[in-house]
Length: 111
Image 1: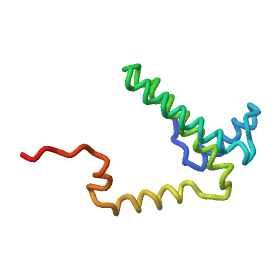
Image 2: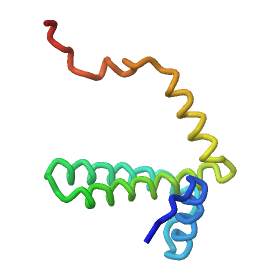
Image 3: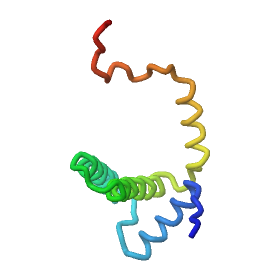
């Protein structure tokens, strides 16, 4: 069965429908919790990977992160075009030098 990949906007809409259907928090006051839950799910993904669990489990945890982030974005700025924002951010990152973020890596021994 072929699955079509939704745009970020379509994914955000579907997550919003799920939130409403299941009665999850759906107000701006819920944004901090959604961001916290995204962080928790990211930790669960890292733990899953570290423990060598099946890749599918780690991917599922990462999808949970995406769900929470999409839902938070829906509440933060429903009018924002996530697809456009993604393209802008990707273009910006493409202009960064190859060594961007080098300060976060351990120094390499000189040969």
